Figure 1 (spheres, rainbow, N blue to C red):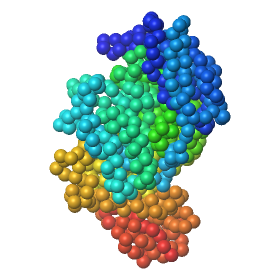
Figure 2: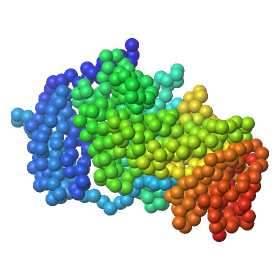
Figure 3: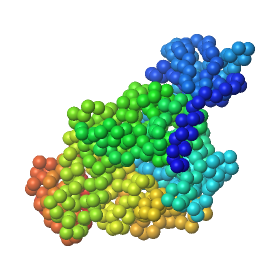
Figure 4: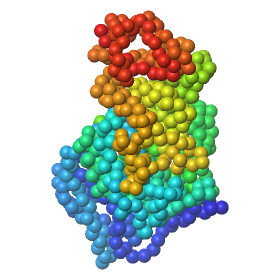
Length: 627
């Protein structure tokens, strides 16, 4: 069986290899810095028989504490202590064996003052984009013959399309105009992966989730320098950058999978074992150990080997890479893929290391669950779990599910049901007591793994506007998937590629350019302007992003909530029925007392009588209350 062979080959690859040391081909991390809070660094040394060398370092302030050898003689792991007195310079790592001496330079750099680890907060509005599908600024890097996947073909939905970081940089102004304050790209690390056969189609790793070298940005996106340049340009424009991290697995072509340091580097099984994708065994007090093990240690898919984070060498490698990335590129926040499949004590250690170095950095992971208890398990929570997570935030899948289900019932008889329609949103938010900091959850309506939002709500523009109103006015940090603002649509069936289409106008030969108002239809401009109006108001009015939230029990399909602080109050009222409705406000006196009029944020109209609000069918209004 093919999957079994893959696993056995990986096990065989860690058998000792003979030969004489010839060179050191890799040092990871590739460098470090003076003045870091993390002063203990474990340098992975790799090369033919590198583990058979006797190592010495003679550099002021740098001490070689221990040289560790492992099963594979091609590896050594050097534990270094970097004193506060150490100066920037070139550290020479010297390895000797008999008469042979090998010297490898390892740079100790000075830290710069460029912004990094700034974090994202509820004041931000995140824009999620797939670099390969957003914009192509440099066609010369679309494909390379020396990579495992040398293809680039926009006519094939499963191949790479040539989008890159230079292209994304060319549209920073577009994002600023929209009201975006932070950009989250799907992973940008090298994915030198072969095509894989999924459902009968040969697919590339354009999505970026199969790393093959942690210290290299994929050259099809422009490489390390292009990423540095993008982050610098984004920061200059006032945008933050979110890095998409993957700890759970790597690509089958990763260099340290091909020649693994030790058998325990990966989770091994007698025969190939996939994760069950079930989160319940982790929090289930009655769960069997085998169910937990399959969830956590089973491979995500056969071509994404599962890292064993309980191995201290693996843990050190991943943690140091996370710190190195923030320091090298200056990213501001950390989104973690497949968070719930990771070893959670390792995740706490990694989160703590990042936060120690960058106290403002925000970390939010992907735990695709369907209930608040399981979602709360992976963030700081108020539940008496045996394990306590230290993750500051997380992607709010449960609120997304409630909003989608509720929006689908807008305008139908179910809209006024006991537990239906807007009640779903109300009831989900009513469970926020399980989280220590619900405002740090990242909210969303869709993403690269889900059906597009517009299609999910039946291409109903009224539902579309209600959903975006909720997204940009309720608690949390809103995130929007690229193209939602121009009404991009589609379902995952028959493939994920359908929800990952190219942004029109991102390629020089595109017939339409929807980065400009002239290239968009009237309806697309209406959608764009709707998002921009709300995002701009949200950015300039702290009450809407950091004010307290108070919601009122929905009645007859009418749902009202308030964002308020000492300097202002905003009322968001939704009529989820298919008929105009009157909403008496006497019940809201706790929040509305003393206010006599309001400004409609979306239309700029003034309401001079607040006793009863007239709400059109299938509409959400945002009212800035005034005295």
